[in-house]
Image 1 (tube, helix red, strand yellow):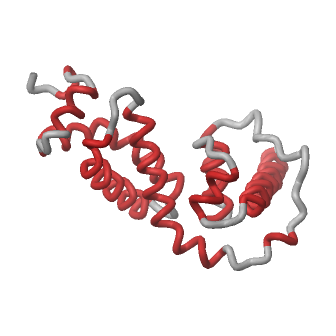
Image 2 (cartoon, one colour):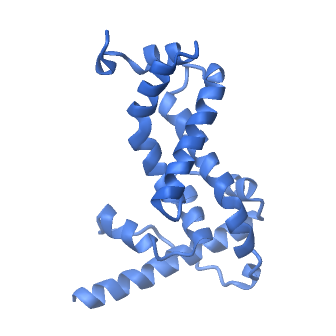
Length: 184
């Protein structure tokens, strides 16, 4: 089997655990697109995303012997990629956290997820969000972390996570209204 397509993820992972560089490269190529998708969501540009992907894969290869095959590999990889991206952004985010967010008014029941839009529209509008709001929106809405988990990852109170998420949704709503108005 010289062709990676014919090999299962399990076979490739098992070879990676022996430190075989050829199989590490196969694993990298097989999951690059998925990892890059995660990197791009948490990064300010493609270069940052690529650094996240490469740093993430270095961590994956260092820790691959800890991977237990009773869990899906993709979920394990995603956790490492998200954490790598968050670690990378943490210093940028620290600066933004100095604003007084506790005075913000929490937007209650109106804070429902965005409907009737395609993914490309949403991704384009998400680029308009401040980095801290974008990061929390991604963690909560896309990657499914709860506010306590996000608070732990970003070293902020969970109430702040809630405020940033509602601000992100409110900003997206106003961008959507403007978008609809421009096309209407």
